[in-house]
Image (cartoon, rainbow, N blue to C red; front, side, top):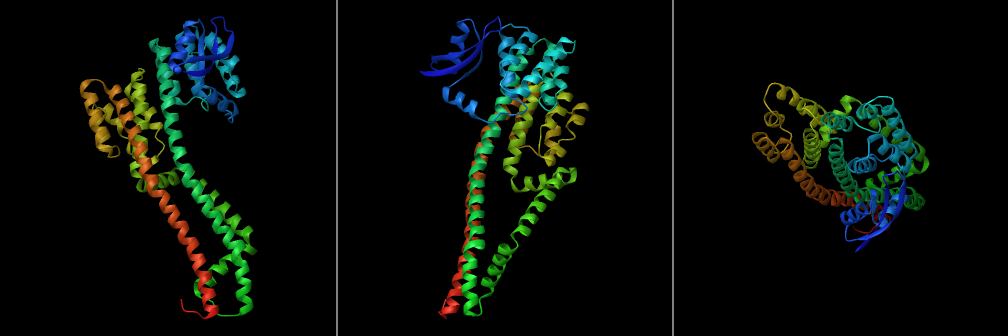
Amino acid sequence: MAIFSYRATTKEGRIVEGAVEAADERTAVEMLRNTGVIPLSVLPPKESLMKRMSLRSSKGDVLTFTTELSALLGAGLPLDRSLNIIADVSEHKEMKSVVQAVLKSIREGSSFSDALQKHPKVFPRIYVNMVRAGEAGGVLDIVLEKLNEFLESSKELKDHIVSSMIYPALLIVAGGISIIIMLTFVLPRFSTIFADIGTALPLSTKLILAVSSFLTAYWWIAVIAAVLSTAIFLKYIKTSDGKLRWDRLKLKLMRDVITKIETARFCRTLGTLLKSGVPLLQALNNAKDVVTNQAVAAALEGLAKGAKEGKGLAAPLAAAGIFPQLAMSMVKVGEETGQLDTMLLKVATTYEKSLREAIKRFMGLLEPMIIIAMALIIGFIVLSVFMAIFSVLELPI
């Protein structure tokens, strides 16, 4: 048994907080519902504490908003009452103001989807379109549940990728700092010794000492050059041509990982939209927008045209030549059986699991490559110093 902290609301709108002992989170939610309250969040104490201590997003937490709204609507509360409760319990000042603005628009006669559309930086287009489909079909609570699943899956995938990159990033930082210390602190002391002796030094030693002298005397030039180069590069890859070229390079270097990321992202988005009642052509345009790699997105440009011409989805996807063959086969089976939305979600789940192995393999190659590169640079510096020492002492190497 574990103790879960919770935040809930009564049907009158009063917020209550406390703790409940249960075997798991689902059991805790059921226990709270049986007491007559509507659970908004149920978390283990550690996770709740971490959540309070973490940095708050200025845009608010859309996942939390969706979870709470889904719970309130599922309990039978009207939309305006639910939004009013969420605005009261929101810990984010900006999110509170956004929810209040959405509530104001609804009370002035706007639909929920139109009210959300006024805040594109908080609610992306896919979110608005799914809500609009739920409103049209009278199943807004069900659509919000699917949106919640979609956002949770996307967050989990993003967190896994970010956590996998932490160790390589630390290796690069630690290795870079070590090299800078050797060039700016250690080598200048040797250069003074070699200058006093006046012996001819090996070419590699002269090269290393020249770099060391430059960094010691003109480090500010190196810093300015690095900052400018980074700024120019970032500005270039923000242009359409630059981003396309950069994404093509990334696709060549990490094809397995990027293909699986985009396959999972595209199929989950499209499957969720179709299951929520969004028409295929509109769903295709929205799903294509979530593809971040422009080289992949460019290859998917013909999907909507193929669907308009009656070719379905599997044939245009196969013609794009981007997604794996297994995904194409599963999509084709989904079309033939009339369960395209379900099959797309299965494709997404399959490749999300496969992606973890692909990232693990990629990191398994990347980490030793970083270590070897750093070792070669540091080894070259150390060897150059030793060669100079041996030449001064006139000892055979």
